[in-house]
Every structure is written in C-alpha cells, then in structure tokens.
Amino acid sequence: MSTNNERFEELNRIFEGVDAGQRAVIVPLLHEVVFMESEMLQLRSLPQIRVHPKDPSRQQVTAAGKRYREIMQTYTNAIKTLLSVLKNNGSDDGDDLLRMLKEFEQ
Image (tube, rainbow, N blue to C red; front, side):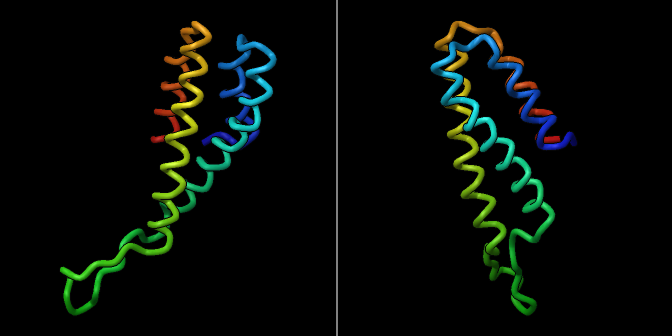
C-alpha cells in the first residue's frame, strides 16, 4: 500500500480537470478519504466480533467493529460525493477513481 501522501496525490490527479471552486471543496475531502482509508486498514487488523467462550451463538460487535462501520459509512458518502463531482463535471475520470478504490480494497 502506498503512503498517505502518495495516495492523496493519486486521488488528486483524478480531479485536476475540476474547476477551482469545486477543487477548493474537494481537496480537503480527498485528505479525509485518505485518512479514513488508513483508519479502516488499521481497524481491519483488530477483532470485529467477540464470541462468548461458552456459548458461540452469543456474539457481540467490538468497539473496533463499530468504529469500522461508522468510518465505512462516512467513507461511502465521501466517495459518492466525489463521483458526483466527476459526473457533473462531464469527466470520464470516475472510472479511474473506481479503479483506485478497488486497489484500496485489496
């Protein structure tokens, strides 16, 4: 996985063609997306569910699991916003953004 700065630069290149007013809003959102990706990667390494030792049918979501879900919801909303900017801008870069997001999932 690339560093946060490299990831930001990759995402930022996709939005180079967007007008200056929209970029002023998008650049901070790109920083947040990169931050959320790094947080989710860290949370993935932690247990998401706690299983009762005597009764495996009793399970409880851990704090890490709850936090991951919260970040994922925010992340999804941010990605939808970014994709809508590309779509409204008439750009074909939405495919590039989706490709880069798939790279994060791997």
